[in-house]
Amino acid sequence: MKKLVLASGNPGKLREFGQLLAPFDFEVLPQSAFNVPEADEPHITFVENAIAKARHAALLTGLPALADDSGLCVPALGGAPGVFSARYGGDDPKSDERNNQKLLAELAGKSDRRAHYVAVLVLMRHADDPQPIVTEGEWHGEIIDTPRGAGGFGYDPYFLVPGTGKTAAELPHEEKNRFSHRGKALAQLIERLRAGM
Ligand code: IMP
Image 1 (cartoon, rainbow, N blue to C red):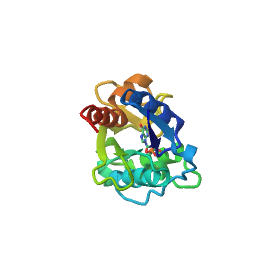
Image 2 (image 1 turned 90 degrees about the vertical axis):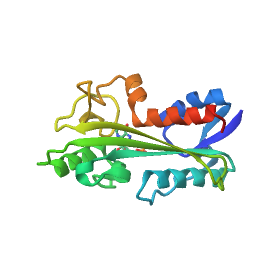
Image 3 (image 1 turned 60 degrees about the vertical axis):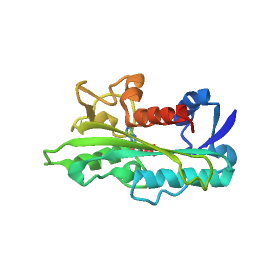
């Protein structure tokens, strides 16, 4: 099996990517297994941050690397929280609750409640790869004021999924994975791998 390093410390992502990429003869290993520290995410677009993370992991391990970057974009807020989604309510400490409270405060009095999640995946064969595989998924919905559901994470209890009457936090796990921004980006990555990496 070919080794592939995942530029993330998230065990849920490791399991999911590991299962989906095994048929392509990839053994997905966390960057922590190689003592790779988390890369900075200094950029203002998802794709730049995902490329920076993948390149950092590939450079320090000498292996192909996979990275993702994701967040919530709200048109009425000029695309915020965007790449700052994880730390929108402040860095110290990061908290979903604080992020959500800030989102609701910023949206107070605004009638346009549309929002979409974005996920970008980057697979780099090596640190100098001039043509990494880049895929992107979006998931559109709207922000409600009262949280519902205990599943998911982050902004999910406030993210109403059109046509379901449910928030992302009320959807069963498999259903969220099928419709979500990450699910769509991953499905595209798999297609690209099938077509030949
Ligand atoms: P990361 O790309 O896993 O670091 O996620 C960035 C941030 O975007 C998370 O901390 C969440 O605040 C938000 N986010 C990304 N994907 C989701 C999702 O599926 N549900 C809820 N929040 C999300």
